[in-house]
Amino acid sequence: MNKIIKGLLLCLVISLSSCGISNELRGSSQKLVELNSQIDSSQFEFHKTVISSLEAFLAAEKKKSENTYKKTVSLQEDAFRLKVQRIFKSEKESMDEKMVKFLNAQGDRDKNIDKASSNRILRTSLIEQALSNLNESSDLLIKAEMKQGESIRAINAYLQEKRPLEEVQDQLNLNFEFVKDYMGQANSLIAKTKPIINILNP
Amino acid sequence: MTVVEIQTKIDQFEKLMTKADVIEKADLQMIVDDLETERIKLLTAGLRELSINIDTNDLQELDNIADSFKQGTLEIKNQTELIGQAISIGKNLVSKFT
Image (tube, rainbow over all chains, first blue to last red; front, side, top):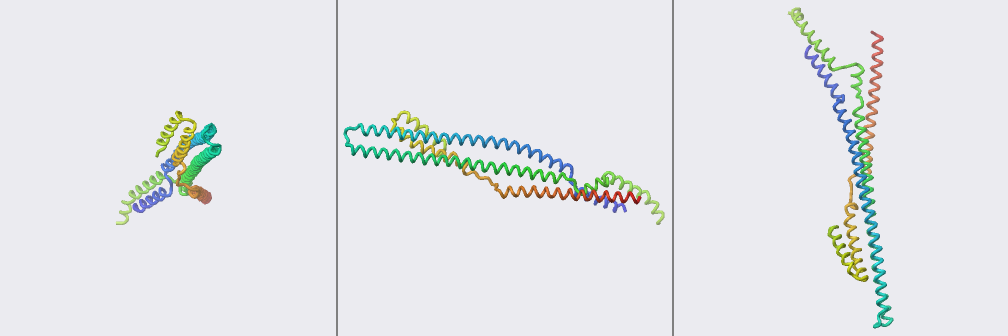
């Protein structure tokens, strides 16, 4: 009889503890949500600062690239003017020779300006690719962090929700201490009645 | 060549330009222009090749995880409510018979 009661008690304890969720687990889950939210907001601030610094840095590089192009074009024009002055100042060459030199100088200037222009287009394109990739990756990371936070909150809500067995426990006012006391009393009663039963059944 | 090495070369050419005439300056500036392009190539390489291992499928997967747990929470809530109601009916019945 004693063994049956102990067995029943053990089954009850195992079933109640395996189906419910402990307060420690719920507390840890809640803490995880709070810490995750703190980390997310710090990470977001850090992310925002790094991204805006990189954007400013790339904007400065774009400006520098424009200045390089302007300087190159301006120097090519200045050099061309000086070459033309020198060509037409010379008294040793014929007009035809001067025209050939002039056309060559003009060709060189145009070729160099074209090269500077394609360099400028390439630099701008490289900077824009970097900016676009940076923003795309940043957006994706922020979205993923937000969705990860939402999943963690959903898991927490799932863990915090009262389990059906806990509802049974609450509704029936079941309490381990009460069950243990009750079982203890029952066992002592059995122990007390045992000698009488032994006398009755010799 | 590294970005620093390229920048050092640009600085050297710019220093030379201060002592050169306009035609020489224009020639040196063409070299600087090319070096600037190389510098930008190297400088932006990391950002241009930046790749993160998250795509829209992963975002959808995260949505699905959140939805599954939200659905699970709702199911547990409904079950608990049903059990609560059943026990309450049972209690009322027992109180009427005792």
